[in-house]
Length: 224
Image 1 (cartoon, rainbow, N blue to C red):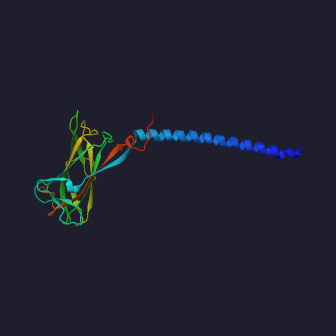
Image 2: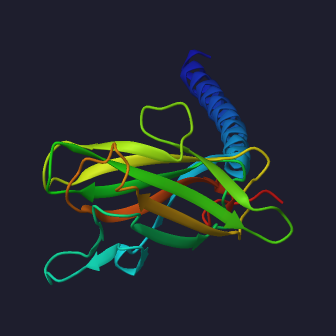
Image 3: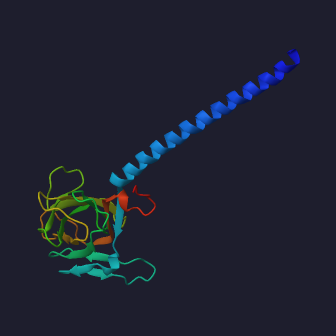
């Protein structure tokens, strides 16, 4: 009988190992299914930042603003002179993944060749779409918790490109919907007493960030 004990022990041990592996596989499968379900739910309702870039060389310019592209090796820019109300305009259609009720955030790269000084900039975002009123936005400048149409921007270093972040927040009951036609206007108020820059303000680029619904991401598998 003794010579059979090792064999019986080996069989029992193998059966125990198999049972353990089957249990591990079952719980791993259940855990993966639960995690996948949670990820799918997040994908259906979550938000991720999306971006809209504008070609500054194609932006509309009015009231004295001009395009400068005379140097072939450098990218174009928009010049806002130190007189009147020069402005630039960019237009876009709200993307289909836009989450209604969320902000747009504008990022403007700019420079000037006179410092130290301040310039006054006005921002306006307005939109129109079928079946609802015009979309209006409050403007929030860096460091401010109170909306204002105009901001006083400090130029600290001559010729160095600086960044300006402007938060555009939906106003009251005037929301924006996917497919709406939008217009962003940036105007220099050169006649304002607070505008002390004696030269051009050069706008190098304009871009927008918004919150997009992850359910529009092509690589997300939607639940039936």
